[in-house]
Image 1 (spheres, helix red, strand yellow):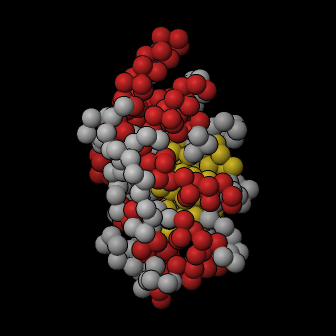
Image 2 (cartoon, helix red, strand yellow):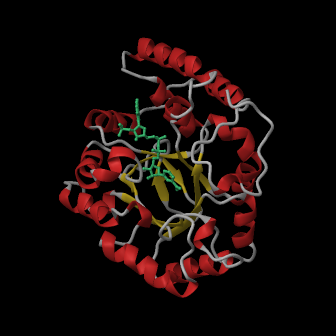
Amino acid sequence: MTNNSTLSFPLLDGTRIPWLGWGNGTGDASKTAIESGKLALENGIHHLDTAQNYNNEQETGEAIRQSSIPREEVYVTSKLSGLPRRVHVPFDEIRSSIQGSLDKLGLIPNLYLIHSPYVAERGNLKAVWQILENLKDEGKLHSIGVSNFRPQDLEAILDGAKYKPVVNQIEYHPYVLTHLEPLLALHKQHGILTQSFGALTPLLRHPTGGPLKPILERIAARIAQDTGKPIDAAIVLLLWTRAQGVCVVTASGNPERIKRLGEVAVMPDLLTEDEVDEISRVGRGIQFRYYNGQMEEDFPLPDLPSQ
Ligand SMILES: NC(=O)c1ccc[n+]([C@@H]2O[C@H](COP(=O)([O-])OP(=O)(O)OC[C@H]3O[C@@H](n4cnc5c(N)ncnc54)[C@H](OP(=O)(O)O)[C@@H]3O)[C@@H](O)[C@H]2O)c1
């Protein structure tokens, strides 16, 4: 894992996280967690993201063990999910559920997240967070954080917390920027790193790509011409996300794309400040979320078009 300051982000607890991660929760990546995970590792992506409900924690550990990359050079994240989705984990089973993650992985992950506020029974979020804090104190977990937390969820656990979550992993891309403003302000106030999933949503999941698509393509063509590198609009979006100071978890089960992501993982900043600002400004005018679950409950949406 590189400690180069542009290729990893510092976390509140003094550790660092590589800016680009390969997740095995979506698409073909989830079905080929061992071989694609190994390919990702051996092509320079030393950051794997899994979760209980991806049903491949064991394969994630196996990908590392079968690769030529030593465990200590790999950053691993897993999550307390509750199964199935949106069913809380009974409070007295939280510890054993987390231990189940560690047993399947065969290692202690660098980062362990509460996958969603709905993992906790109503009113119990702080108590669940305290279990993670205790496990950290006992040396059974290392860095701890959260995912899909709205402002009110963060506030619930921050109140008197022994440890603040080091990250909040959320759907993050230009088309949710306006909605996320209060949440991002809270992250900034507390030093919580924003971690993005669904970063490619404007290009891959928005029905037309919206107003950003031609802008991203124009910037990609400009960089390709200037550098001679095969840069596409998806890479521009990933580099924009890093330029926001946001860590990215992307995914792929496609060997060629995995190799390309390995190149992206070590790319310098190729966007100009004006290009970064243009993407943000245009993105702020659109509201489009793909993973539209709990993040929109009791967290009002801005009155913006989706196209
Ligand atoms: N915490 C949470 O609740 C949560 C939710 C969702 C995701 N995640 C994590 O984040 C990871 C990434 O999530 P995501 O899939 O939403 O990320 P993403 O970066 O938005 O999308 C990745 C997907 O895009 C496809 N893709 C990439 N480049 C492409 C291209 N040029 N053309 C067509 N398809 C392309 C990949 O398919 P190919 O396999 O074909 O390359 C892959 O399935 C997950 O695996 C998981 O680890 C977390």
